[in-house]
Image (cartoon, rainbow, N blue to C red; front, top):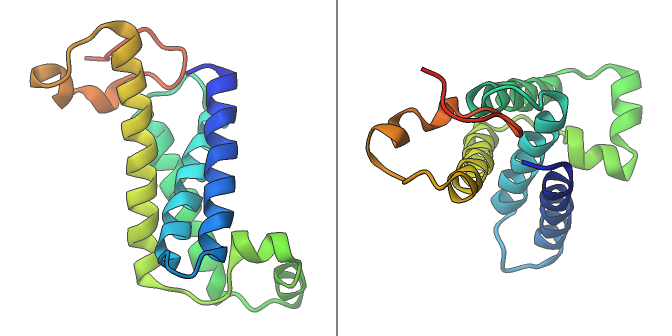
Length: 146
């Protein structure tokens, strides 16, 4: 996945996530799903040559870490949480349902990246290739690992 494409997905995730917080009929969980998808795209920048599975694992580890930080009530962290942008990242209250949303959002990002890889490589979807699809290299990689 190219830098420009990943950047476009980052902006789309941020924009859609912010809109989801303002539109009353959209569930709050949509924002959590999109936040996790954003984390997946950002981890792709951090680990551009790693397999999608690795990027997804790193994104989930980061998301779980942020969720666990909600148990921490250190004064410095509470001060950061009062800044509007940090509130969207750190939140206030631990929720098991957030972890489910994060898993869905990261899986969504991984599925999009894998679908884009297949469409540019001419690789058919399904069969044995799909079984190995989470081993597709991150953004620039040539294909499946065995």
